Length: 494
Image (cartoon, rainbow, N blue to C red; front, side):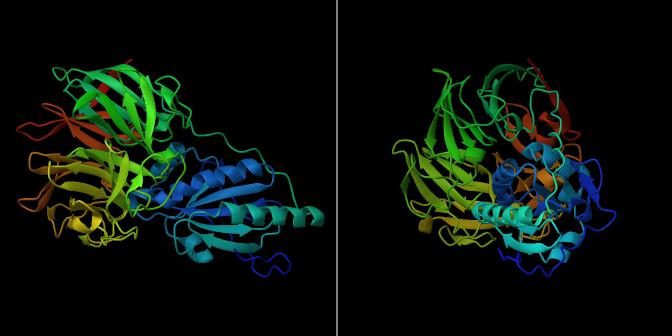
């Protein structure tokens, strides 16, 4: 980060008039923030790197509560992300306390010359741009720059106290808050990652009346943390993928995304233990490693195949396998480059894989940042694996179009299910369920746009499908019928 403390030359560009502001009582200006150190965070809420820096921003806000004003500049990648309501839900989901401006036409982005998500711009109390930095891992350099600015401007007498931080957005009243993923066992139990409450919910479900379920058990607490222990004392942080063990339905696994860990739930002993990860964010995995002690990077979903748990690792753009017998992590696919490149697993480029399923032989995954659905033939090692794209073209090619695999377009899908020759996809930012037919090589929409609100997962019971309707804070039921699928809410009784 450049430093202009001694001879500031560049005035920070002012926020344009007419932009929509969230998480604050009204529009802000840089002039109104004079006397404070201002940190702009250019972000978009789909971006895994933007999620990773939120703890850094929270750390800085807590360390400098009276002198640092953080402002989120939301410059959307996807059309869905440019909508004020959806940004507001992301603010609530991520627990963001600072004001956010919707920069949907990239006016602020262009004025500052931002070129990547996330990008930070640091502004001194007199309104001069001190420097900019992009990417993750900038906590230390930002902390040092802010501390230097404080020393300089205290001596200069140009600091002013900061107004109180606005409260967090209110929580919905229902049992679930931003549910991420789910799984179904024996047709009568549903396991749900209650991501917004940082816990797991087990539901009793009777498919004779599939629109109703009853809460059986809550695992973890509503506050985030990283603790093994009993169902009551264990803690999670933004858990996502959940799967019952196909050989033992009294065991389940959880991708504890915010803790960068794989956790095991034992329903007999009512305990939680960590089987992979340390609670700290790592990077990519390029060789077999012991699962305990190896840092993971935002594991988002998981599926069992041939005795191994295959993990969609969103952070380093990889698929990694966990072998429960040897307690080893094995790379399967992904070079750690974010892109859409097919070929051998060790050279293929993925882009934030966030949902994964299997037909018993092959793996299929939702590669969210390229809005694509891809097929993976796993090998004994990553160089023997092979990745092939079914639908999707690139990081900035997306849409809402049915048709052939070549013509169809999705928008940031997060969930995927193999279902008797079809791939059902939670096309998250198009708010609908799509069906991909690998035989006919075409895509058909099963629900109407906005019948759902950013659905993130779909699983099949014996006769109906259950959907994690994430921004609707609940589960939905999709019933097949000769006249077309019927969608309804699933009511959960406590």
